[in-house]
Length: 326
Ligand code: NAI
Image (cartoon, rainbow, N blue to C red; front, side, top):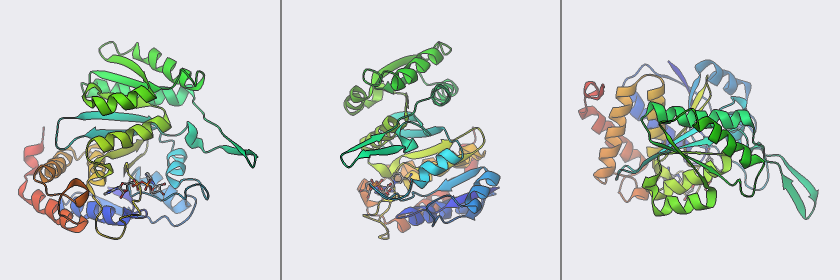
């Protein structure tokens, strides 16, 4: 099948090339439709490629800070109505295992800001019943399918009584249909502290856009950094897989980037397109590498991105995919 491949900016081309080499070494029926983004808005060529392939693997894209064009990541999520941002947080060295469902199309990320005067600016924040219902249902459905015990909804409805109030009330309504799954709600500031103190108390977390984004990075910090948390942006039709981290300009071009986050995103992609045994085998190779300290420097190892890639390819050669079939 054809998959749109977006190398992106900064460390993007390094980790995308690493991931492509590793996936190609498994000799699957995958053809890459490579698209470089060099414009400030999405081109027809890119949109057509994603529309027809329905699956994309993407490197991070840079967004100018404090000025300039609207984030291309946000443009992609909005163009394809990718309302569900799914981010599993699994510590490869311990048994911490939680997942974050982040609403992906609205909240403050609509990017609607207005200038009142030189000294005053306003930002709009949108929460709708439909988008809230989509993300909260996705979280509960995931919990049901994967035998997860609890869904924790994160909000700030004590202050944002209308917007987060709506998100919370939709959560309460939906939870009533999932009697076997425990439901709790926590105010976002308390949630941050609880995650740092005792992350193992959480299972499935669902949050509006900004809180979900911040909590993902906090969770990444708990398990070794941004180099290890994957993500998927999903609608009913289209799936775009990408690392949680950004372009890491401080290490770009130095062969220091950790490709694990994108590799684990590629595992989610392999699950999605039906290569579940290959996804399991690749996850196993990554986990073994981390537990044997065969990692890039951010995780304390000695590998460059290139040598880590070769190491994983060698590991995959000695694993037998048949033994990963359920
Ligand atoms: P960042 O995630 O790029 O980097 C934060 C820190 O984590 C840096 O010290 C970086 O070296 C480290 N890091 C990140 N990924 C790593 C990896 N794979 N291996 C080793 N170390 C890694 O966040 P920052 O610096 O705030 O953002 C840089 C740019 O990325 C901005 O333009 C931002 O808009 C963009 N961005 C893009 C995203 C996307 O395309 N989905 C997501 C987040 C940020």
